[in-house]
Length: 120
Image (cartoon, rainbow, N blue to C red; front, side):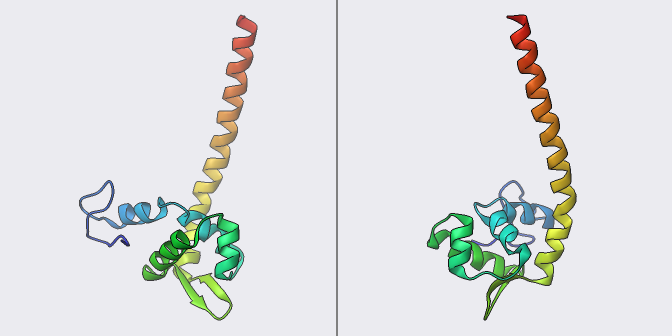
């Protein structure tokens, strides 16, 4: 079932827009679909291969993304709508933060492993 603004979703009884968006984006393969469509239109088969999922799940997610206006279907396949591209732009700072955080976490894990090895 596609999440709806002002209706309860996972983690929110209020259905606030942010919580509805997070519910939708947190669903399996949703972010992957949006990621794959960043560079342009893809056919269903190309999306299926790129997302490494099954036809049923891909159909479900594409239906949800179309219903909320993030993706549409045209002759060339599926593509991001203007709203879908805006979402991609909004996620860029999160991507940058995650990359930096990932580097810090890796560095910390290496430092912890080195400290553990030297203590032995």
